[in-house]
Length: 194
Image (cartoon, rainbow, N blue to C red; front, side, top):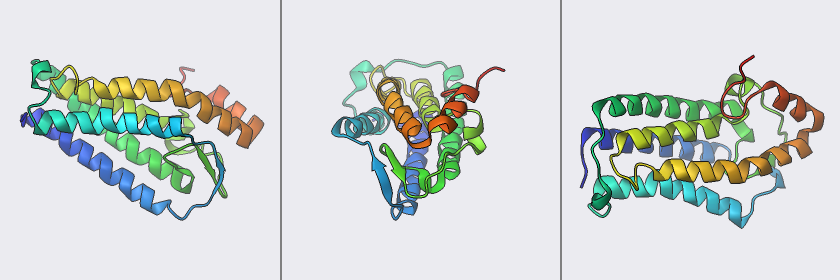
């Protein structure tokens, strides 16, 4: 078992992540879907992120199974990891709040769905993915393990590259020129510098 403070802080952060996600899944359960572009591959991407950001880190922290891939991280990495973790959790929560009933774990358009351009979405189109990246950086900075420490970043990169083009195509179909204008004014996961 790897119950060092940095590992336990990451585990606590992931528990908060699960609570946030569970709360918003329950609160949007009654929202009716009008367009469903989810697929088996899309659901597999979600599973990949769960494995990379939750299952493998939990396995590392609470068992010795991945110990052969351990290495020592400097304290400065732990400090950066805490900043990434707190920022990622706040952004994860805030992006759910900003989306409200429009949020879905898969590629869906909900009834009465409107293009959200307030809050975090005012500057970036994908703050939830940005939060995933921040959490993946936290994972790499807090977990001194070549597998568990980096699996989140790999999973999130695959998710982002594979899913975002489909998500943006769905939004263009649903919102047309309004979405195209929004794309021109915002960044993907980082704000545009202008």
